[in-house]
Amino acid sequence: MTRLERNTPAPPVRAVHLGLGSFFRSHQAWYTGHAADAGAWGIAAFSGRRPDLADALAAQGGLYTLVTRAADGDRHEVVRSVARAHAATDTDAWLTLLASPEVAVLTTTVTEAGYVRGADGGLDVTPAVARDLAALRDARGAVTTAPARIVAGLLARRRADAGPMTLVPCDNLPDNGAVLARVVREFAERVDPGLVRWMDEHVAVATTMVDRITPEPTAADRAGVLAATGVDDRCPVVTEPFSEWVIAGTFAAGRPAWETAGAVLTDDVLPFERRKLWLLNGAHSLLAYVGSLRGWTSVDEAVADERCAALVRDWWATAAGYLSQDAAELDAYCAALRDRFANPRLKHGLAQIAADGSQKLPVRLLPVLRLERAAGRMPGSVVGVLAAWVLHLRGEGAPVKDVRAEELVPLATGPLGEAVPRLLAALDPALADDAALVAAVRDRAMNR
Image (cartoon, rainbow, N blue to C red; front, side, top):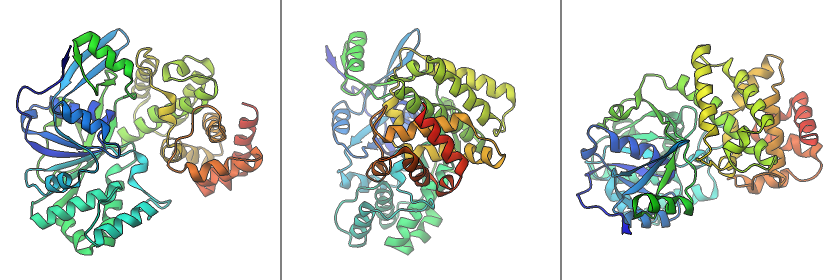
């Protein structure tokens, strides 16, 4: 048995990443490592919260094994693009790197909740955000939220006169570039309005659509890598063969040649974004809540359940009517999704997908629901998901893990007839004003 370690120099750090985790390593780090100019673009990756993964990855020189798990077998490769791995608490490294003229790109995977947005889409001044604002105004103390960490880095970059750079969000949010730009700008305005003017001249923001199913790794995955390769990798990543990355925007100081690794550069991410958010992510949320209520724990199990599969087909037919791609392209996309979901060896956990439903459902299902209700229709698939989500918050199915859990779980208690409108209002007050929708969700929850 050998340990994974570098025997050649790491590429020079020219990109920084916030949100060190499995998806980043199966996606952005993989694309960077496969770019034609990979040798010139090392990544310094920082964890969002826990230091254990950063410590394990640092001990391996940033190297890790990517296991591409197809239905007929595994492919193993060592990804070499992460040059340095840091814990979230390594503030000095964060500020030093973002103050370096060599760093041109900052990418993020902080989850939908990590952007700390309020109901209006702007910065939500939570207690954590308020503490971070005070820390940056006083120029003392570490900060913890993603907008604060980015603003702290930009302040350091301005002080060093390090030149332009580009922010590249890589989370499942509509128009994620605008989302990131707004919360960072609003945070900066509260700390130093002069920074906003500097950002206007020096900071570009790209918009992306990302796609690669990446389950949480398990101890069995680590054991499998050891058995297959003879290498004891403390932090392998398991993913599917399919991958997609669509990018729009200008890059103020250059970027890796991601297109040579298969990324799509475009002027408009929206058609790709809607197709993916609605058809893939929307179906994932459906399977997570409905499937876990029916006793399943993984996507492949849930999609093999005919009741779940029928709801997915109904959802796809409903959502496809509002997408710009032609019918043949959408049929092919959905057929590919069926194969991806049914992969019996990937074991994508429903509990992982069910996390933070309060952040995911508004972008994955509610846009289509609003269009359907405006047309006078009641989409049964969406009603089914909302009913299952209500029951999930009442303790059925997958365990509750949501950034708004302390608010939502109490709203879910008591008679269903009272809990349903409270929870729908928490997603969007207009939903609770739709008496027919409230009745349909309540009835479905009572008669699941």
